[in-house]
Image (tube, rainbow, N blue to C red; front, side):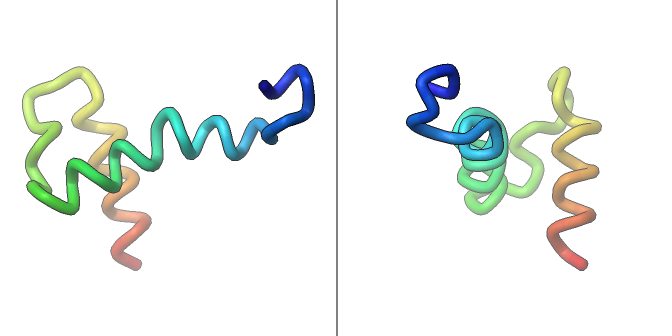
Length: 50
């Protein structure tokens, strides 16, 4: 879809990473604790809460 210019790279990044992160942490802020993405999730949440 990006190659065909249907969506932008930013839209793809949002769809694949930011949106799921927002969804799961809105239900349980500690959802990613103990996982491989815990550090990245914590960094995102710190930026989002500013």
